[in-house]
View (cartoon, rainbow, N blue to C red):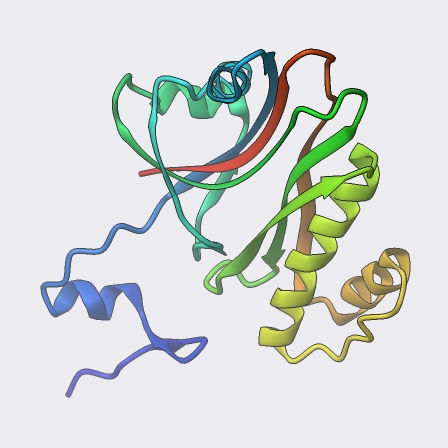
Length: 202
């Protein structure tokens, strides 16, 4: 009799495959970011995607799980997998404004568990008036807090990020937290868009 393997309350990938189910589970992910300014909002977005190196993709926004056994690779390595027109799944954050001299930011936070067979979390964060570091810390905090709750780590949401980071280190259940954040000051006479993305490849 076949024994089912369960991870985080879900049947293992092999069990799904044995049942003949076709699953799109990414094997790799890379972070990228960019900014763009133009008199038209759409063009500012396209220029931000171009700055991020993913303007050739047909991007499908997804949330917000870092798959088990997924490898985090560099942007340069990840772009080798990009082909013009491909359907590209990504966790994305985007902020746009035409308010001159306004500080804007978009960030993706990431928390990866020490057990590679367990899924991690990705968060999307959009900010006005926050520095790149402030927005990045918040995004990272959000991802880590979501992962901590699934791992049974007791966490005081009101503690500072540094205090929570120390709890994560002591718990030995979260191996890596990071963020990818883009900020910009809105240029006068048009729109500025910032994007950050965690891009999945198969």
